[in-house]
Length: 69
Image: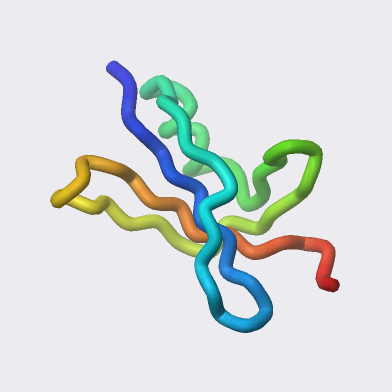
């Protein structure tokens, strides 16, 4: 089974910016329990929280850049 995951970056101004969207396997989703950070396009992000959007059927993962501007 696969789930559609949207990764949203919370910027320093509070804006939410979609940085990635792709299908994840069940194993990848389960690994979220063991990770605090993600690498997306060679940039590191700290995971803040996640929510299931039942209207779109997507899991939305809120992250913040480790490297501050």
